[in-house]
Image 1 (cartoon, rainbow, N blue to C red):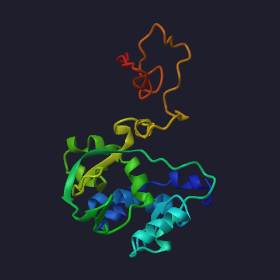
Image 2: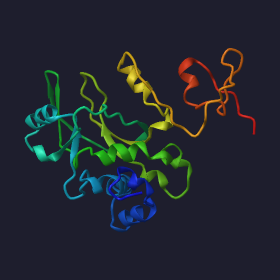
Image 3: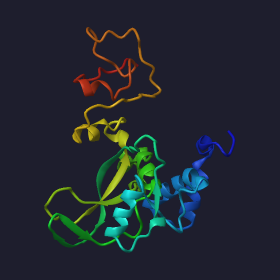
Length: 233
């Protein structure tokens, strides 16, 4: 695939890039996300380990963030291109990590917290959504769970609770479509393209058969109240 094609990154082996991160002393929980950044985002000017940038929707939202955070500058952000689909990246909280943040003060609907050592970057979102080992990493010997991406999170609401550091992983640990989060936000409608390795069984009789994961994507039936039957092996 030509190097100037956006899909070229998918043809690169990530193992050598991951090893370079580890050999360079990058923290375990950062090694995968930095590998994602170097492999898939850096060729397009969207990742620079020396100048980590956050991302936001447009100049208006960026300027509002900068106004409320004087330590930030306009060039600390990547902006979405106009007239592009709204970016949704699916991740899962898989467990509590180590460490905690500290709330400094609160009042009148706002909470002031210490700035994080680095912003939440595109590589963090993409690295989390591709960390498919996170759901069962704790079951694998060798401390693999230490390599799960981590992020300090605070529950939304008016109460003030110090943020806790959580281990994160691929959104498929819960469901692959990201629909649960959209439903909780009361999105009135969604169009979902299910592009999986399981082809739709056009002979499947929805009225008289319990679906199997060989009939259609396993994540779809539960949204309609169906429990998958065990697949014949």
